[in-house]
Image 1 (cartoon, one colour):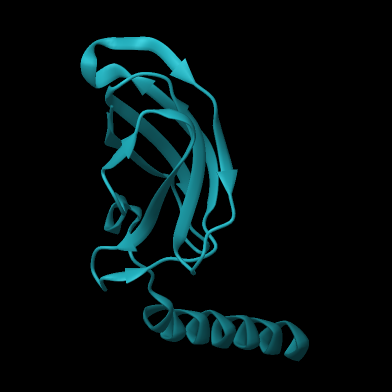
Image 2: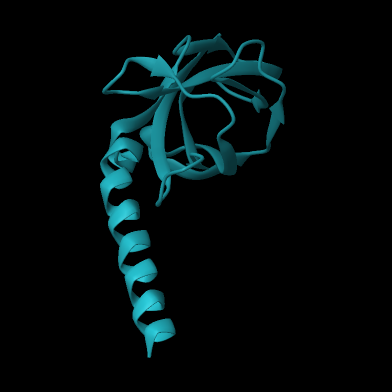
Length: 135
């Protein structure tokens, strides 16, 4: 009997400790993150590089080491969502920036759709950014 009582006491103590430590480990909500374009325009043409940063809106700090798993670049803002081009991820130059190379085959507005996971957060950061390709 004493062993069962001790086991319950230890279990209760561990639960209490985990609850007491939980507020210290609070993370931001997934809605507190967003992608931002570093430069909203590029020259039309092949192999153009677009740089975005992932920001924590509450702290104003860039978020490094996110896993970007979804990218799409199309001309949806100009009503041509079927006009899609390949997007290739490239290494960023500083923590919290992410670079992509793409072919902007014609001038106009292009929509870059991104999906990413932030370490320690549940859910997915999803943003649609509009880039203007100029002649």
